[in-house]
Image (cartoon, rainbow, N blue to C red):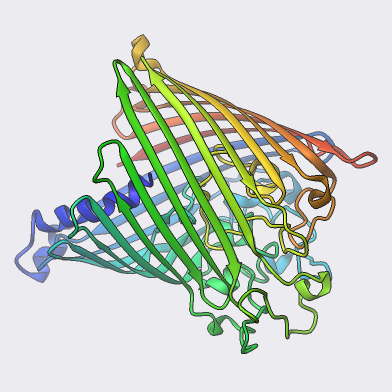
Length: 490
């Protein structure tokens, strides 16, 4: 279950009712500063293309007022820098962490960036959060710049700077054991809109620090619905998310979501999770189902009135997708084993061969690598590619049972088996240009809370090895990724 968003209503309602100020001046004087430092070292060793070795670090600095009549304000500045430690050659840098000035990159005839690499390690700062929040009984309202974390509309906070949105959000907990969520975002900022989650490759002339419309940030700008007007970013009404989470049956969590990217697509998502305890063992299982469909043109297809549209040039007129998953596992004395299976249906004449597009961030799959490969994105480490059957088996151990509190380790094996008739035709997204069928990946990670006994200091290391079944005569796309992350909250 998405714990962050299911608990946000109750947590913020409680916070708004405690330590309330009596005057506006008191609300500011009794407010609090919080912050953090995040540092990541990553390296990618490739078989045939340039290796990348990257250091990135950034600050998070927030100020939040005390509640005044149930209303609070918060602002957060996010920043990132390469600290002068990276290569001067942008082909050797994991640019997903940095500014990515798209205006400096060359593009092909479809408007796609000609390289998966960015413009080096240009640092930046962005006012990612600037919102008001208020509690009215059991209803919580939030308006402004914020983080949103629905399963398929996410801040995707795994890098230095997260995705953030200009949005409004309402959370209600009036119904027992039920959380209702309504969010509407008009703009997005962050690394995903110029990297792996964008629809047609990186969005034209958009930097990670920009707040731009959902259509432009996801590279849907230039497509159109039936009226043929979606040719500028102001024509898009943004993205709306409606969700409900129910936990009224012991051990069972049900959630349903509906995402509408206006003028572009609908995406309903259902999920059920169940857990039960038998003696000292905890058993769990889950299923989820996700679909997407274009709502432009005839309501089933995307219209392309714009001359030179990449979809028109490729003869593609839909983004219909069907995705289902199941998982089963158990925990006993610190050891957790999980099995998961996913299927994404292959569809001809489709922008992603039937793959899930995810234009506003988010990845709810249980069959995926932990961080995903920075520049291959969903290409070789996700079950969302069309015509794919995916499997994962993972084992996690809590070393607290061995006397090392706060240390956890995990090993995971993943297989992505693609139907050759879909993977041989890359479509608009050019998934796996030269890897026709299978991908095998192994991931190992260690995480440690309270490093060196310091409160608020945690860290982890993740190693990922990806082996692709590349087409004969093509260069190998195999690679090994290493990421080391340290976080300090204060």
